[in-house]
Each structure stands twice: as C-alpha cells, then as structure tokens.
Image (cartoon, rainbow, N blue to C red; front, side, top):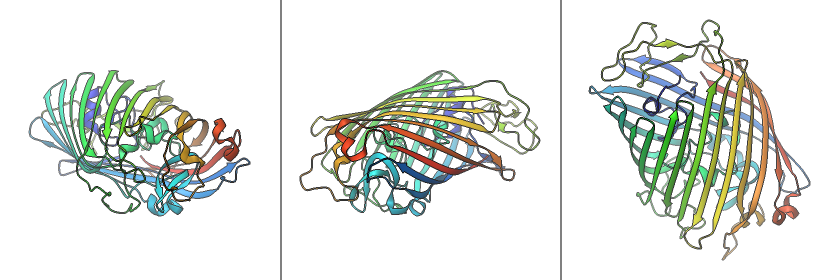
Length: 445
C-alpha cells in the first residue's frame, strides 16, 4: 500500500504518531473490512543473536527479540471526516533479557536504576494507544488531531523501528536519543494542518522518558501531565521525497538527571523510489489503494467513500527494485549547562528481485562521559554528564524473504557493524571493535 500525495500519506497513518515517510513508500500489512470499518495489521519481529568482537572486556553476546505489532482501524466520520484508532504493542519487556540487549557505545535510560552502558533498553508493552481525526477542508487541505495517552509527538522523522530504510536492521540507531527517542511519550496531543506539499504540527506531551516498569503506564517522578512542547514542519515536494525540521522543549526527560531540561532539534530527508516492476504470482499481489482513506475491500469492484475519492481499488504488482534512504541530524542541548550532543545518520535499504534486501546504516554519534563508567554500576554521587566525543559506526547487512502462508514473510539474515572509537574511549573499547547480528525476521503482509 502506498499513497500519491502528502495529504493521502497523512490520512493513511501507517507510521508511529503523525510522522511521515515519502508518499510513495510501500507499507507491508494485512488489510480487511468489517461493517464499514477498514482493518489493518502491521507487525515486525526479529529473533536475533549478537556477537561482539575485539579486545574490550565490555564485549558480550546475547539472544534477544525486538518486535512490535500495530492493529489499526479507520472509518468515515461525516461527509468529510475520518477517524483512526490505533495501538502499537511490543513484548520486548519479556524478550530482551536483563532490561537491555548488547549494543556497543549505546547509552540512554536505565536498567535496575543504573545508566545503560553498551546496551539498548526494550520498548514498552504499550508503545502507542491513539485516536486520530482528519477533516478534509478541501481536496488539498487537511486538518488533523492526534490524542494519545501514550504515543509519538511531533519530533523528528519516523522513528527507526517503523521507517522503511531501517526495517531490516534488528537493533537501534546509536543516535536514537538525539533523533527519535520521544516516539514513546505520555499524554500526547498534536494538531496538524496539511496543505498540498507542506504540513505544520504542534504537540504538547509529558517530557519524562518511560520508566523501567514497561508492562503498564507507570508515572514518572513528576507524573504524566503535559509539560513539554514541540513543533515540526514537513515538506514533501514530490511523492518520493519528504523532509522535516522539528524543535522541542523537553522537561526532565532523563530519570538520572531529573532537574535537567533539554532542547532537541532534528532535521531529516527521506527518499523512496521504485525502479521497474514485474507481475506478482497469484495470491501474492500487494493491494494498494489510490484512495486517501485506505477503504479496502475484498472485492476488486470499485469502492466509494463519501467525501473522499471514488476511484476504484488498484491491484498493483510487487515492485521489482526499490530504494529507501534516510538522512538525519539530531541535537540535544542541556538547558542546565548548555552542553550539546549531535548525531548524524545515513540509512539506505535496497530491495531487488522482489525478495532480497541489502542495507547500510552509517552514523557519527555524539557520546557522553557515561561510557567511561562500568556497565551496570550505579551513577556516582555528584556525577556530571558531559560530551566526550563521536563514535562512527558502519553497518552492512543482507536478508531474503520466504513466504510462510499467505500473510507472513520470514527472512533469515545477518549484518556486521564496524566502529571507530574516539581517543577518550580507546582504553575501554580498543580502536576498531566489531559486532555481528544473525537473525530471523518475521513480517505480516
């Protein structure tokens, strides 16, 4: 399923929160219809093993699973409106042992009340629970409202678990906490106005990151009240391109530094393009709609949707080759001491011959002196976090799809990451450590 315009991409709501990828980006999902409701299901899961190489005593290996599932339903509301109900769930609190999986140089949040060093925390069971309303003001103008007890405010690009360019990579980006870590926030309210190729949004939300009680809605030390604000401008000059700039004032995001507020800025550019196509085998054709509301039925007869398009459903062949790329800059600035950390990311995913994927992720991520602490140790008394240097990481991977039934794909794959260590960390990590992941990826289609 893909869209043709920015307005259609907004109405599809196929990413987390209100974030957007290029309108031409295909979305793998199961679709159905029941009593006038369009039903959709997205899901992605990795069963992975990490092996870390090098002379560092910090190296550790582990089996773990990163995963999420997103049921969604949509229905016309009035002649020009549409309501969307969506939730996103993850069982990572059970499938990520020790409250974090190994990832060299990664930092952010806590495990057992200590800072996570060289690891990535699991996502919450409730990643999102949201209601969205869209009102068509004209064929080219859309007014939107997003309300979520837990959800994704208008900061940054589509978060790494949900963007196509990162869809085959089982682990988090190193720059996650400068670029898109707010994709799970509490008490989110976002209003947006889309006109032709531009979209402007304003969000209020609770700034504190989720606690370690990841199975339920656990309040932070200062509750769940809306105390932070963000705004984002998205530009989409063509169906293949999307860019955004966002800025946020975030109150007390880090549990270990409760008196520190942050300003976060992000800018990103995303590109997707399909190169040629070939007919898909029977029963394996992807269904794509040229209707903004994704009014999908089981019949190939034309469907109508009052107040939106009356064009018929299209049965579009699987793309033969398509390329998805993402470029991201993220900056987090402490408003206590004015220190700044910048991270830069480039991702690219190439699908060829329908079922083969190759990808790369290249990063230059700002790190702090927390990485000098012993992993698992509590934060020292009177510790002051400060920028330490930048870690470079270069990842390359491959996997191949196999069909398991009509609506499920499995892909065994592997990737390798080589790191370049800044001088201040070489005694702890060595000059050029590496890590490999071997995995099986499952996806609903």
